[in-house]
Length: 342
Image (cartoon, rainbow, N blue to C red; front, side, top):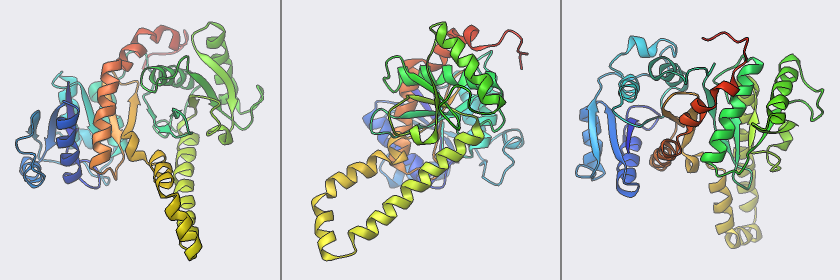
């Protein structure tokens, strides 16, 4: 399996990307293509002893898409950017998946217009897996689509269910709709219309819709997939991330407040590290762009080499599970008859 890595994307590129790629090539038996400024990439390979790593190749790309570039036009204006070249390679069948820690907006736009969506999918969605003490909860969408229609939410539910079943190992994944209350009549026009569509799909036996869910239900194990418009989903995601950082910061202060507390912290040190690892996005690796015709993984902008390694592992799992194929095979159930193709 060949994974194409945008070597210049992210805050710690190219060093972290190259180190993660070398580890993935060695431990996952993956063929890795590093796309970016060849001289810089080869210097990083020399630094980490990866010049002779099996399965590593380099494709030169002279430009870099930065966070300052206009996301919607970056791939057009920078045709020799590492991200653009990587996506073109994927489209042309020169790899099985793309992983990038670069600009989310540019990656989403580039993947949509270069690699293309599965025919019939209205919008691709970002689906991060949030920890809940079990297999996690897939949040669909977390910011790719700020304004949504009910059909978008229906499609997010289907795509999320396929991912949860094939990647997260959830049997008959439970799908819930993010709302301001759990009652069937809650929400605005969008939520009410989406609730009706999801309920209809459930009655047809095509999806395991368990109803509305509030933000406080995220960690209860009530659902495997939580469907939301990109605005609400992004607010929820950032709130969870911020809350985790705050709680760990406060916990650290408590642990170092006295000698007695330090002793207690020492006794539960292993458990604390386990809790931190469970909440660490680097352990997941990245966020799948669901709805694109081939596998595209968005790694976190601050990804270190461990996160890149895990993003490559996630990409390989998505390719092997053929999540895009499952979406394509079920697209007729995911569209409204009155909807206009776009």
